Image (tube, rainbow, N blue to C red; front, top):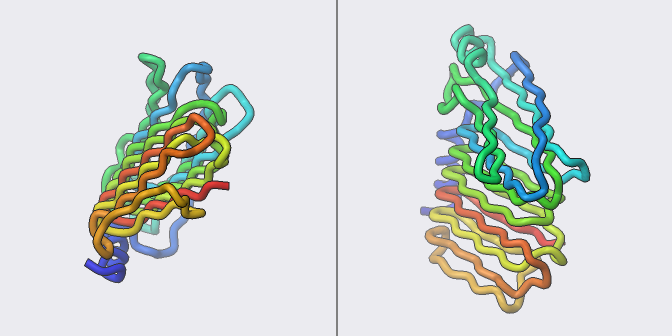
Length: 212
């Protein structure tokens, strides 16, 4: 499967590009202990995660629709659910699992203290992470992941993409990569000066880690 076909798969699964308007916005703050991990569970969305100097997780979820009444009805069922247990703060977007003409689109912004580990489980969408300094673990079904991470804080990077591209930049001399064309691409590097482990698994799409 070539790059054009990968792009087509993303287009077919994504929300159609059309004029949309904001229906609801959910804004909430959550305390997170120094030894807690943030776990984020999202179905279909565009997500940005940014490190902060505070001691809580700040979340802003924007829900948009076309002029469809069915879309607006579905938008009212979307909710942000939290649970804290076993040293993990879990945040999940419920009531939204599909794309299509009548499905609302979601944009999610998350600010989390830089030293907290983060785990993300997404179905379809785009994910951007920057400003973190602890372990990152990402599992994305279809879409694109871009992570910007201070090189001084990283111990290892492991990227795996079933169909698509995996890239670590700048390319490290002791990193290993494998894959054939756009199938089964992997990148592995474990020679960093820091302690953070970055792991990304994408089914179809692209994964890029940029060390700064």
